[in-house]
Amino acid sequence: MPESSHPVNKTLAGKICAQKSANLRGEIYIPGDKSISHRALIFAACAMGKTKIYGLLESQDVEATIKCLQKLGVPITKEQNKQANKQINKNITQKKNDIHYAVYGAGIDALQEPKEILDCGNSGTTARLLAGLIASRKFNAVIDGDKSLRQRPMDRVFKYLKPLGVQPRLQRKKFLPLSLGGIQTPLPIECKLQSPSAQVKSAVLLFALAARGVSKICEPFPSRDHSERMLLQFQANLKIQALGKNKHANLASVDNPITNKNINTIATNTPRKLIIEGGKTLIAPTAIEIPGDISSAAFFILAATICRDSEIRLLDVGVNPTRMGFVETLCEMGADIRISRKKNTQADNNSRKSAQKENSEPIADITIKYAPLNGVKVPAERAASMIDEYPALAIAAACAKGKTIMQGLAELRIKESDRISAITQGLQKCSMRCDQEKDTLTISGANIGQKNIKLQQESININAYGDHRIAMSFLTLGLALSTSDNKHKIIVDSAEAIATSFPDFVQRMQKIGANLKKIQ
Image 1: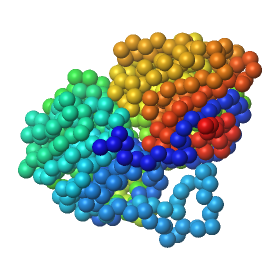
Image 2 (image 1 turned 90 degrees about the horizontal axis):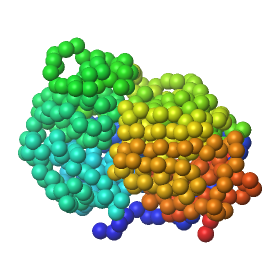
Image 3 (image 1 turned 180 degrees about the vertical axis):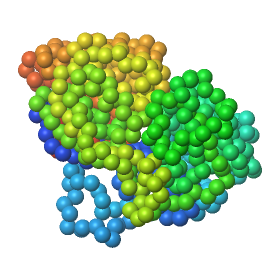
Image 4 (image 1 turned 135 degrees about the horizontal axis):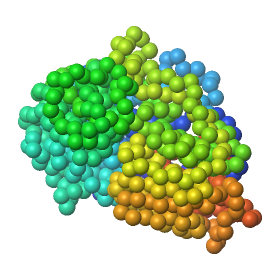
């Protein structure tokens, strides 16, 4: 198959140039959270009834999930809201509330054997979650992706499913394409997750949904909890038990009291046990609202923090506690970040059970002002709460005064690129000191904003290695470059990778005054 089945985003194709941009100003909405968008679609496809999804991220990655689910026989349509004000000027400072996506689920057992390859494009979330789901089905399927996704390991999902009879066929025992034959009777699973991967956890939970019986999943190193919140929205019989701070937590004492009435009462760093009863029908809520993506918001938070005299406000951003490591770290570095108007998303505008409301995604407005930063040491245990934001954090560290040490980054080696190497090479091209070890980055900040830096050439070309977050991170650095003549610029080639998660990144940055432009 071709390296990528997605059309090139013409507005991003080619090179994007970034130059110094002080005084960023304005209010802006951030597109819907990518992780939550994937999960909303997949769980809605497994539920009984129609689910309306508002604020779904319209990106290549999410499009891949929609197309895969349609190949599995699930009708998904883009619909106009009856109450929509057609006269509203749809600019990028407004939330897209005039359309929604409707998923018509008929239950997990209604999924059909696909007649075509399930092409996940560049989306690791799509591939891993579908792998867990299809492993519980009786039919066969082939899951594949683009060249980049074929280089990301998929075997971690099956470490926990092989003992139950799942027999995947992967290239070199590890990589896509994946040929998967389902099993006749999925058995309940009991396992202890070995790494803080929300994708692996979600895949296991999807398998457990179809098992006839109770599955118990121990999570010693908690990861983002979007799947658990989503399952509770769909009225799954899921219970969550806090296990204290014992990193050697096990599956014993399952009869202890369960603390799942409000997922927010469990500390984000506390090991937990997930107990889910499979074979039960998921019930579609009337509607689900997708909050703004904190991982996409990270670049705007970063830009306002490192560009002098800037102040911006981000509206309705998801502030899930398991995703706030980046904001927490920036505040430790001295950033001026304020969170206000915090509330929960309304997954159903009609009457809802209190448990559903309590466990929906928290959202808030975030106001950011420019502030000088100082280097810090970022503990390894924080990695799970900011794994996608490390490229942005590396730029903040490069602009700070002093040394920043980031530990526990092994997961970055197997993202869309080897992000540790990509960050190191990019910063070194910008005449900044960055040293990498196996799972550690050490960055000596250039104190940008307080003094000029010396660059070897006027135009710095950055290789983003087809990685959207590397591309957006170095474009954001270009906005803060402080040199003697302020004529230097950063150029990122093959910027179309940005479309996998943030298709209108450039336009939204330009809206707040960023000096970004496409060049030939």
